[in-house]
Image (cartoon, rainbow, N blue to C red; front, side, top):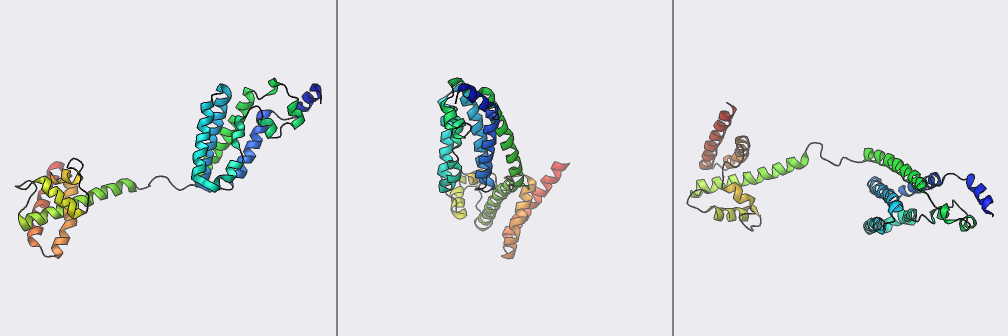
Length: 273
């Protein structure tokens, strides 16, 4: 085929960027059918980054850009194992091969490709059309996948609530221990007994490993017992532990709790004034 014939043939072909966009769209649409919603999201985000890297690589020819893509691809392979085969077999890395991609994707026949001159490679406009089209397509796909996925956050602040409940539970345990020791043995954290020794005992009874006082949340609470938190939280904690002692008819403990409960309620009222 003469150069004139090749040029006439090229006139009948779609623009290179448009052609590659259509091919990439079909490849991506087909390969995603092998994966669930969360996997699709992860792979599309990977492809979004890939086409950004294709654009940067075309402009700079910096091998670090390709290596970044290759490393990310390798991590996905490790994660997915044999399930990665459909995606891997599509060879999206070919989009970095600007010299051969049109031949690989059958834009040219082998004969046409062999007769091309070096200035017939992809242009910046071709890459722009390809990457822009992919950005729009992948962004749209991702949008609807996000709409289908389960929420990635707690709608009722469960995490913060769980953390607060965990903190409150530890405080309730320490309060219970505090009143048992005070009522039964006249032992108080700020009395003649060492706070550090009581802290280590509390760690033992609560089943928590003791390392140092500085790392102990129990130690920080024990130093302030029974007023570790706000008056409102203390009232809540005291009301929570009181029934356990009432059921055992430990009146001396209940009396101590009631005394501190009354003081906390008075403190709460004075703060409101």
